[in-house]
Length: 106
Image (tube, rainbow, N blue to C red; front, side, top):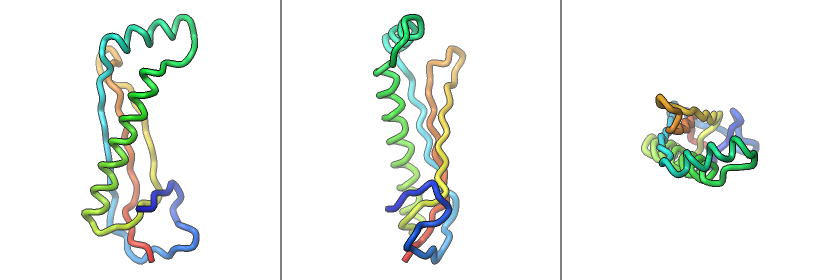
């Protein structure tokens, strides 16, 4: 399946629009990741644990979106938008939401 943030795919013609598809993943970070993330906030640097969780959430969201597009008979998704949010009372959960238009291309 071809995935693109653009509304068109160069070299391909969209022959049918199948509908909007969405994939979402909400993952909680455990207490140790929270603790080390807070230490990183104080001393600076990147938090590998959070980066890994964000990457995993993004993969889950994309897989869900592609599965829904396949069920609609699409072979590409165009106009993909990726959103990241921190949710929960303490901000300990991360949400990745991806959406796009499922299309059939030749």
